[in-house]
Amino acid sequence: MINRKLFLVAIIFTAIFIAVFFLSSRVPQRDTQNERIHIVTSFYPLSHIAKSIGGNIVDVRNLVPAGVEPHDFEPSSRDLVEIGNADALFYNGASLESWIKKWNVGISVKPKYVVNMEESLKKQGAILFVKDGITDPHFWLDPVIMKNEVIVIRDLLIQIDSAHKDLFTENARRYTTALDLLDEHFRAGLSSCDFNDIIVLHEAFNYLASQYNIKVTSIEGISPDEEPSPKELARIINLVREKGVRHIFFETVASPKFSELIAREVGGATLVLNPIESLTPDEVQSGEDYFSIMEMNLNNLQIAMQCH
Ligand SMILES: [Zn+2]
Image 1 (tube, protein in one colour):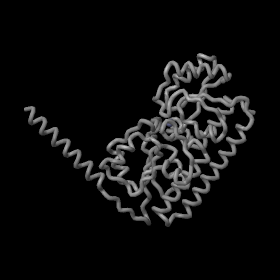
Image 2 (cartoon, protein in one colour):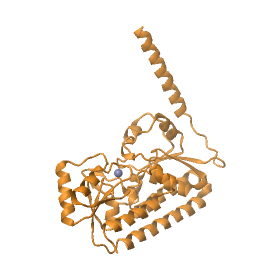
Image 3 (cartoon, rainbow, N blue to C red):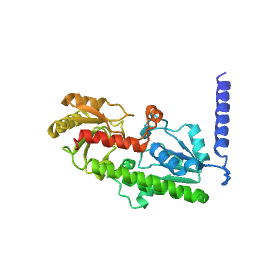
Image 4 (cartoon, protein in one colour):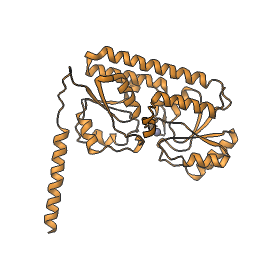
């Protein structure tokens, strides 16, 4: 009886394996004249750039659903099949996607183009922050570095579909102009402030802080699930008191408990500083995007830093 059950289980697993294998090994034959380019991105900022540059020509599927943060996201077997069938996969790199290492060495079928943004930025000469041997992955929060990401995505779309070179070039130019404007807003908006120190939840804002000369203290590590020790919390509370900081930042997709605890402890308030790793369902519903959230971040920074 047990043997028969085991045999049945083995047959079912074999059937699932064969089905997944055939689905994922289906090689896409793209008709360049009529068919849209199929792009898969690993998280929100990359999908926003790809959609903005690709317009109607490009079909973009973002792997991480709304409200889920990408640091510990795992793709489903369906996602893996979709990646295999895409023309290109864009991912951030620098250990943001914990699944990518396994996927890179695994037997999964891979798209023709796989772009690791970290490597592409380094090739362009971007200087990335490294702490304890780990590269900080949060470069999309610096509008100046984002301009390099636009170039990478534009150039690959042109390589895949050169017939639409003019459209991709024009859309990329518009996106870059919007990034220049955002950069100007940050520079002007933070030029005259009473405070220079901010306290944030997870260590996502080093690039932003470096670009605009802000001193940042992070309550948690590079990933939001690296919780602080009681000793570290006490150190941050002392620092907050010493610097006279009145606002502690928290995030929309991670738990606010430590930010709230510190704010309560020092009689301060909490404010959102959004690392834009994923939009919440509410943000999607109300049509927020990278630019509108960055403007909201600037607004909240001006409140916390008492800019005038
Ligand atoms: Zn992060």
